[in-house]
Length: 464
Image (cartoon, rainbow, N blue to C red; front, side, top):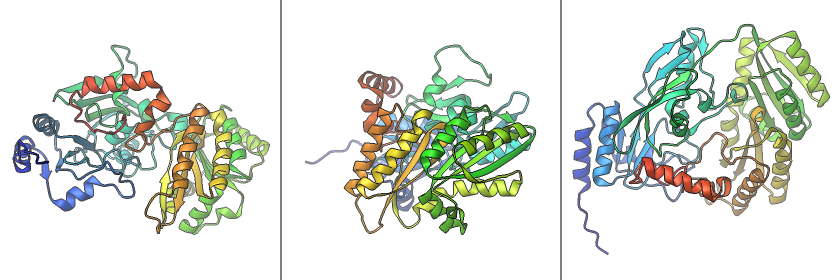
């Protein structure tokens, strides 16, 4: 059937360029291809964008939304494009709206213990600047060196320190956002307490660009703790024993800032990648950190490790050795992914259910004859099972699909969530009804319709 278009692409692009004064509008096919499709994640519903806009200001973002409303164009907000759930891939004929170049640290206030930043500021860069003033920014996703604060806020990113300092939502005090109708609103502020009005700040944190485009974020900063930080490793016969030890440590009063678990397959992959020999020790590895260690905390740790049959325990206060251990954990993904097709998942469990989930994943791998690497932020119950298969298989094997479905159902049966810190994107949006229930699922769509009645912002993501 012939479709008679009201406007040509050239007319739309010309109008768009008139609205974007401080940034750039790019339509080169190679750039659109690169920014529309994330490697290894592209789903059937992704598509080639019409334009890639590098916003230079809030005014540019308002201009993009004005154009989108006029021509009914979908808008996909994009930061550093590190999403693992198809959260920022292009939609066919869309505008990809990048805030990557809005990357100014507006203010760091030691007195108020806050920082105000544009959305494109890199998480690690903010932390480094805060540390120059004796403060630090706590959220530390695995993508800390490359992901942006705006993207972290949009997805409610977690990380290794969540066990002590919480996820991004626990560290955002306020933000500004441009709505679909072009208004820029200010939510929250710089006070550590705030009880006025509905908490719209937290509604936007984790909204994945479906309610508005974040233009500024106000975050909490913490003072660097006094005392000597220590890190250590310990090995256990299996992940189940490790999980039980983690639960005991978590409620001991030690207050670790890191409790990271790696199964034997992951350790072997890291040994291969890093040229280390950790897999010679035992079946599962725990990496732990105490921000301000004392003889008492070390005593409690050693007692609990012994109780749960840990071996080859090593504790260090050396800065370089600690940095090497942190790097080891951050290198987990490239070590596992190298040369293989993969899907990494992101379930979070009540702490008491972590050990049963570890058992279930191991049994599932054997039952379906799948290679499953298991690691995660054990201290907050966040599990990252990664299923790998040969590069020669172009389609996802049915056994992999079955394993994911079974893991998701098991997680929900145990009272967990199938998205702990990686967001929902397009990979999991069909599970809203299953996890949230029909009533809450409907309310989610009503909220979306209130903020974005034309359905322009990041369609097909977060909710289905």
